[in-house]
Length: 73
Image (cartoon, one colour):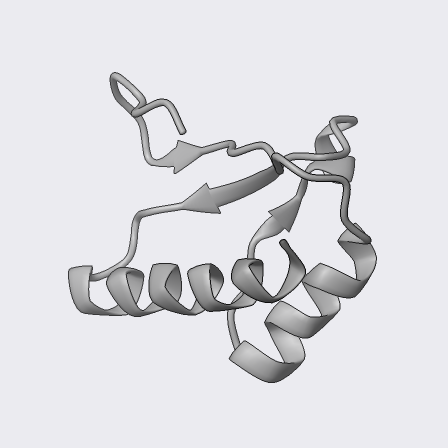
């Protein structure tokens, strides 16, 4: 994670080789949380997070993302 100097998105990279399709499917179905897969930007292994949401909603989304990532790493 590198904190962006400005903007409303970040583009983290997975540290480990994971099944990205399974991860995104699990994140959406089980955690009701969505990130944009890097494949849409021709950058597999990354995902995009937008942070133009209310603080409490964004914080909860990050918490759920963290929980799902821990299952895969």
